[in-house]
Image (cartoon, rainbow, N blue to C red; front, side):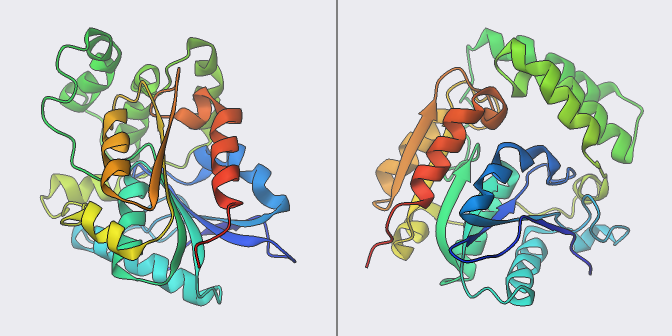
Length: 276
């Protein structure tokens, strides 16, 4: 197993920040901006999950599981000689970040759960939101009607979902330019289609995260159409060490809609003193 890593680089006073992308059949590149701007104070470590980007592909579907991906992240920290690191998990990566914090206690110093959720998404979470129905229609058609397979299907769904993921119309062109650089795969898609992909959620996540006492930032866009913003607020009420920051006029890709405010929230959180 080979895990591809892009890294801003260690140095005096640069604390490690491990970034876990979502998808999962994407790569890390859509998160580089604005996170690379943290390089003056942090060693930002962007990893492509197994089966994604430039990491190992071509494994059997049963090799693509949240448990295996979490094990890779622990092995990566070991390989880099990092006993602990701050961790930012985005979307599906936010679920993996929670698993890492709970199943490898002591390895996560601070945790940013971005555009993801701790509680499960209720089936009726988006009932009555006509704008979401309109914006998500194109991606739904790709998944239900397209004859594409593998990376081409993942790519087509990402482009079709752009208007749902990015709330501000003026940010769409720049977002599509990011998508053009993503090395999409279809490895995790194969696992899902084969019925071998377990849920990435951990049981009783809020209680278990609360028991760790790890500082947690729940960073979300108000208009997120994948994970409701209300779940971030709900989780912050359940976890004493967590707080929610909800950005207005921002969708699932809140870092694209509101890059300055999103980065400011991350920066402020990472610069806070750790509890004794």
